[in-house]
Image (cartoon, rainbow, N blue to C red; front, side, top):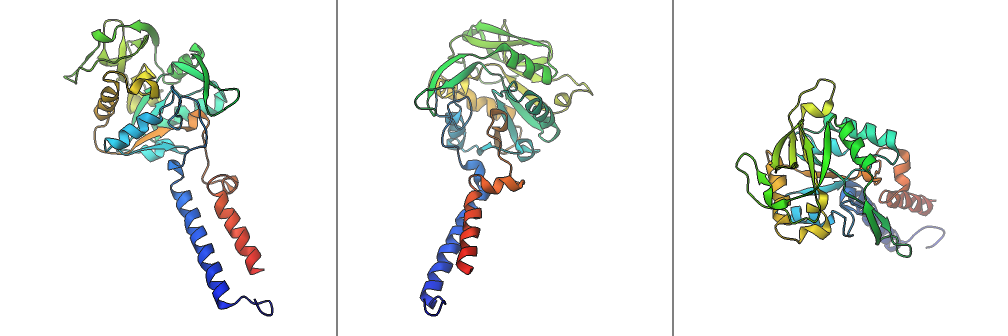
Length: 293
């Protein structure tokens, strides 16, 4: 640099570095749904823990079914052709906000698969990204999910997997699940069911006061089919894919909602420019300003 002016070589290098950095920041911003948090121990599709659903998301991708974990506006992304998967949502945390968010999802998504919770995980005291221990999920959360959906239903524990059959000529694959959790309800049409209850049901009731009743809503009673610890057992993986293909009337994106697990990330607010990954764009603009000054 001579006389306070950059040489042409230095200017070229600075321009190239800044350009590559801005391009990288733009790519991160566009594909932030595929960028995972650094740690998760819960029942979500980022989690590698036993109760997590990351394996399910990767399984769909390997089977050629496009799937993403969504941290904002999940229902809008699913739209008319896609499937919105709301797996084991936690509505008791920030109850009012999450219940309202869940209630509005059918207004934008045409097809939804709601997976009821079964367990709650707690982090390891030393390594927070690891699962420390699990306990049965509080019935309050399940009841709140069913109430929000306008379903009169009850859980049935310890069902016999061997007695479950598909309706409408589906593939008869039996789940390999300990303490199978089924759902008994007159509001749901059985899709996979036995004498004690349903593993998969379809909401056929039409109530003008219930937004869930005017779109295609399916309810899966036991999440162990999708959990990392359950996918490798018996025919669980094949059954999980079969369920998605059954629910999916036409080829489209499978959007796995993570906002109801607390992984919400806004893309429109000013504060999003100070969170990963848009924070890189903010830093790059700052560095460019310093260079110019």
